[in-house]
Image (cartoon, rainbow, N blue to C red; front, top):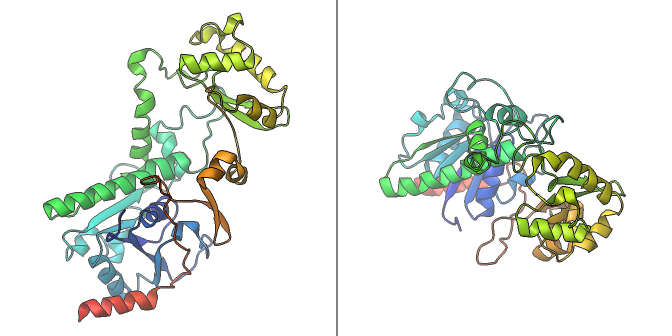
Length: 360
C-alpha cells in the first residue's frame, strides 16, 4: 500500500519503532538508523524492526552525521522519539534539514513539544494518567491498570504518529511543503477518550467511578471461572443482553429486568460472579459458542494463536523464531506478508552504495 514511500527512523524506544514497523508492514521502505553503541535496552532481534533496513551510525560523529543527512534528504519522512531539543543538538532538527522542503518531520513524545512538562521524563502510565485516559481503567475502588503500553505508547502514540505522518505526506505532495508532526501521547490518549466522552449528553456518563455505561456495569467486565481463568462479558445492546441472560438462565431474575438500573449493578455482579465460578473456561466457551451474547475468553498470546477463529485468520505467526502478530489491517481480504528482522547494521553497504549512485 505504501510502496515508494521512504521513511527514516532514528532508533528509540517504544512508540517510534512501533510506528516504523507499521510503515514497513504497509509496504514503505523504512530505514532505521541504529546506534553504534549498545544500551541495556538494545534488542538484537527486535520484532519492531521487521521489514526495515538497518544502518548503524554515531550521530555525534561528523562523518556519520553527513551520511544520516543524505539518507534523510532522499526520504519522504523522518520519525524520532527524543525529548524536545535532542535532535537539534545532533544538528538534525527541522531547521537543519531544509534541503528537502517536502520532508515530513514526525516527532513522538509523551508530553509534546511545548508545555511545562515537555522536557520532563515519563512513560506510558504517566502520560495516560495525566491525560485522563487512565481514570476509568480497572474496576471502581481498585488501582487503575491497563494492558502495558497499549493505551499510551501504541494507541495514543504510535498510531497517531502514523496517521499524522501519512496526512502530512499527502499534504506535502499537494502543497509542495513538508510539516512537523507533534505526536504527543497526552494528546492522542485524550483524543481516544472522545468515544467515551460522547456519552455525556446521554445521561450515561459520570466522572464518579462505577456510574457510567461502560464503567462498572455487570454486563461489561471480566469474570473468574472455576479453573481460575477469565472470561469477558460486554453485552451492551438490549438484544445481546437479553440473549446473554437466556444463556445464563437469568431472564426471569428480578434484579436483571432493568439493564440500566445502577442500584442493582453491585448485586447483579455478585450473582454473575457466582454463576461463572460454577464452570471451567472451556465449558463456558462451548456454552456461548455461536451465540450473540458478546462473551469471549481472555487468552494469552500463545492461547490466542491456537484459538479456532484466530488460527483461521492467522493473526499470530511464528516468524524468525518469535511469536508475533501479523500486519494489520488487511486489504481486499488479503493478509500482508511481514518482513524479516534485520541484523543491526545489515544494510550499511547497500545504503551507502545507493547514496553513491545518486551522487553520480
